[in-house]
Image: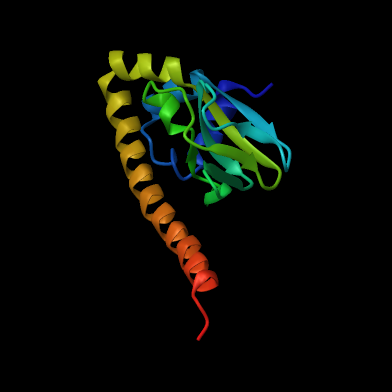
Length: 163
């Protein structure tokens, strides 16, 4: 089992949490644990409850959504330093996508309930976490849009009538 101090050091090495103040890292490490997902394993499923926020330390995760008439569509792939399962932190534990480890993946898993409690009681922690969450979600939105544009460009190319 990894110690809180070792977990704090790991959090310092991950993009999402690298520059958090020591006091915030202490709080985050206290409610977190390291988890491993072998390649091909499902981390969570679309529509299922999930009670953890993950910060990817190593590996790659694919996010897929079910689209009627199209099946599962990859909307985004994320890697080291990226945050996963943000809706759990916002109090909405139902996942909006299915997350699958595309390669062996190691992540920090933080209890979303405990993180929300910390945000409510310690405004420095709340500000730092939500500030990073907003930045990460903004970047995720742009990346998802670009991936969807590629997806629809492929669809449009394949469905154009030939002259």
